[in-house]
Image 1 (spheres, rainbow, N blue to C red):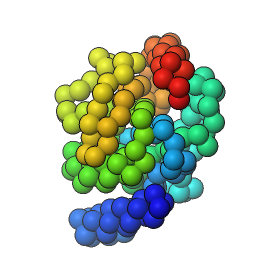
Image 2: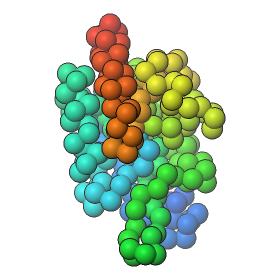
Image 3: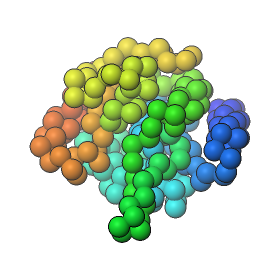
Length: 200
């Protein structure tokens, strides 16, 4: 039942993007346990995710392994998705290569209804957001900052979903800002305590 509802939402999203951008975009939809009480929400897929058609694989998958190892859960225990389900890129004319970039307001706006519907179907008790984009989408505030809110559970109503949001730094940010690593790990242990106390 949930799978069918999610398939319908994904088809509508695909159609809306096709009409908006006037082309077909390769999409990476949410995956995992649709009956999970825990959902992980990232920003947008990267190159490897698009190639494999699955969120949080490649380097992001390695980060996820550390994440679930500290939490003492399995990937199969989670439902994993992104706010924006297509890769957002910038082109470097010098190298001739594409690289990931942060989704812009238009890309987030066109995707927000659909992540809202997706979470309403999954109906989790706990949503873990990674980075500013997912946090701002969930709290509906463009000025919200992960630097201020990380590691603190928040009660959220988002579309028809009501859940506890636990914001974390995006694991990718730690690659560029090594000083965040200890804070990120500390927040993971706080999350683990929260999950144990609330029987997740």
